[in-house]
Length: 243
Length: 299
Image (cartoon, rainbow over all chains, first blue to last red; front, side):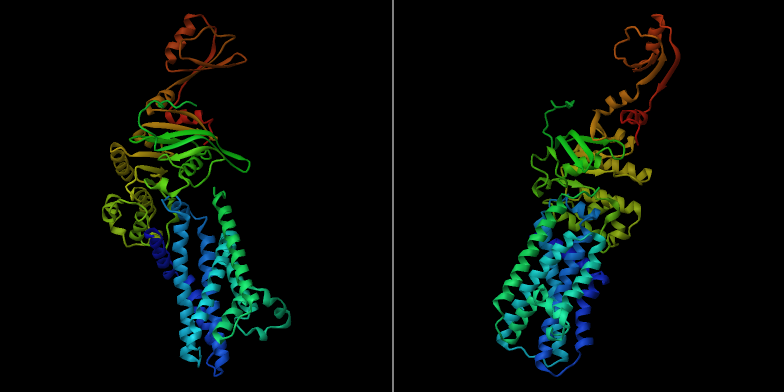
C-alpha cells in the first residue's frame, strides 16, 4: 500500500506540473460547458448538460491519463527501470488508478460547481447518490477503455487517437448536444456507443427515471470488453521486444 | 560450459542457467550460464549486440527466457519479492522530467525495507546541491551519478550496474570505484557491464566474455589477462613437429598460427628442431585485442 501510495503521489505531482495534461482534462470540459451551453434558464436542459459535461470530463482523464499516459510511458527507459524495482504490476496500476480517480473527480467537480454557479441546475436530494453512482460506474468503464487504448496504441499514435476518440465519442454519444440534436446518421449509431449507454444511465439517474436494463447491460458489456482488451494488451506488452 | 568456481562455497545470489532468448530471427542468448555470489564482482564484457543487455534483463525479470532459468536470491526474478535486495541503474536518458532529484530518490527508496537515507545518498554521489532540481534537467554527469545512486538507494545485496561510468570524468570514475569496492568488501555482489576494460580490470573478481549470445571466455582477471597476454606466432612451413606444451595451433595449407604464452621459447624450439619456416611474425595482443579476438573482432 505504501508503494502504491508513493506512485500515486509522484504520478499526481507529475501531472500537476504538466500543462499539456491539465489543459484538456481539467480546463476544457468546464470551458466548453460555458462556451457552448452558457448561462441558460431551462432547468431540465442545464441539469442534463451538467451530467453530460461531467461525463466528458471523466472521459478525458480516462483517455489521457490512462490512454496516452500508459502508451507513452510503457516503452520509456524509466518504466523499464521501474520494472527492476520490487514493484508489482498491481501496485503500479493501483497508483495510476488512484491518481486518475483524483483527477477525474476534480474534473467532474469543476463542471458541477460551475453549473451550479452559472445555471439554475436542480437535482433532487435523493438523486445525488444514484447519479454520482452512475457517473462513477461509467468512469470505471471508460477507465478500462483508456487502459486498453494505452496498451494497444503505439506511443506516437496514442495521444492523437485518445484526442479523436475523446471528441468523437463525446459528440456521437450525445454528451455535447443532447442526443435528439444529432444528425440522422449519427442518431443511427449513437445508441450503441459506450458514451451513449453511459449517458442514458446517468441522465436517467439525475432526472429520477429508471434507465433501461439494456443500457446497464451495455455499460457492463463495454466494461468487460475493455477489461479483456486491457489485460490482453498488458500481457502482450509484458513480452514485447524493447531492444 | 562448466563454471570455473562452481566449488566456491557461497550461494549465488543471481544465476542464469542455460538461458536462451530469441527476438524474432535473432538469437540474443544461446545457452548462457552465469552466477554472481556475495562478495564478488562479475564483469560482463562483450561487443555491442553480444547479448549483455538481454542477459541482464532476463536476470532482472524484465524478460522471460525462452528456455533455461533465471534466479535471484533463489526465486524467479519476474516476481517482485525476488528483487527486494536488488538495485539496478536506470538508463540515463530517461528520468521523469517533472520530478526533482529528491523526489525520484524517495520514490525508489519506498520500494525497499531498509533504504539509505536520502541526504546521505545524495552526499555520497555528489548530488546534494541539485536535490531540488528537476531530474530531467540535470547535466549528463549528474544524471549518470543519479542513475548509480538509485542502484544503491535500497541498500541492496546485489547491484546491477549497466555501463555505469560511461561519460564520467576520471575523478568521478575513481570515486565510483571506491564506492563499489567498499560495497563488495562488505559482502555485496555486483554484476557490471562495461565497455571499459580498465574498469573490469580495476574492479572485477571475475570476467565473463559474451559474444553472439554465448559465453566464450570467463575467469579471474588474471586468467583473462594471461590469455590476453598470449602472443600469436605466425609461420609458414610444410609441417610442424611436436610443439612445447601449452601451444595451440591453427594450421591450413602450410600456414600456421600458434598461440603461446612464451613466443621466445616457441621460436627457439622450432629452430632447434630444424623446422624450415618462413614469414615469421610475432604479435603480442593487448587485453583489448584479446577480448576483440575472443569475440571474433566484432565491436
